[in-house]
Amino acid sequence: MESQIELREHVLIGPLRRSVNNARNVAGSIHDDATATKLGFRGGTVAGSIHMELFPPLLLKAFGPRWFERGTLSLYFLNATTDREAVRAYLKEPSAGASDSQVEVWVERDDRMRVAEGTASVGSPAEPSALLRRPLDRFDPGEMRILGALKVGDKFEDCEVILPADANAARTKVITEPLDWYVGASPWGGAIVTPAAMVQLLYAKPIATLRSKIGTAVGLFGAIELRNINGPVKVDHFYRATGHVVALGQSPKTEYMWFESAIDEPDGKRIAEMRMLLRFMKASSPLYRAV
Image (cartoon, rainbow, N blue to C red; front, side):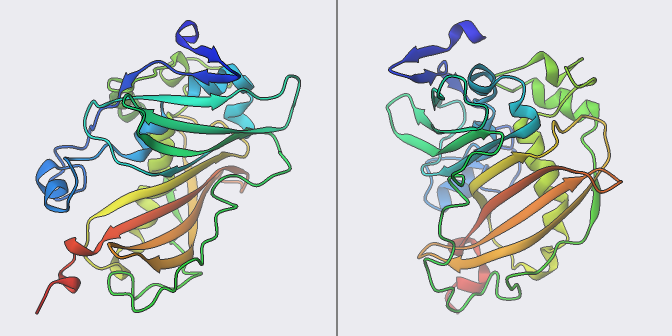
């Protein structure tokens, strides 16, 4: 797979891939064609976390296996894609010999429409990541309806999470950039999780503990930053997940929340963290429908 990576003007360019919308059968979600088109999208959208899986070959080329131990990938999503639309990942080549480095990254569709942009890093670079330097208070929250019961600082309930081997195997059947380490032995022992699976561990069960405070609405990922603190995250391994809300706001079409989550070993050792922007479509909520 490394042989398919091109270096052009100090930019590592991945091969053209067709990311699969593996949630297209989840009725009522943004990934479902009927729901997405009703909300103004061209069709069911590919989750932003799926596009993150384009990057590991580039990250290994740029930073080596250390990225899975102490690396970040920070992306803000600009335009949605639909099932199997061709996309590719780009990563600016880091300076030679730098042990702590951060570079620009982005994803483009084959017609050059930019899908996502941000940064990737390894170690402890001096500058903050793309999402950590992004202001979270640019807009007045105003009167919130979907997220009106939430406030900054609200915590997720602690919960136990695990990615079973069978779930990981199912993910690797549709992944566009498979690595042997996702399904077998790795430099860290057993199999490690894919970026999309890592997002799910840091998102799905933790956010469910706040569901009773969130009104009914269709949600979508607006931005994701993954941080390996003492990684990698391993398959078939129990972790304790925590998290809290860091910002709330709204745009003309959405209400949104930024949150931080983390997974730790049972002894408290921090393994990985995530910052996410989660948007909720106003047009999908009964709270915004005309009375």
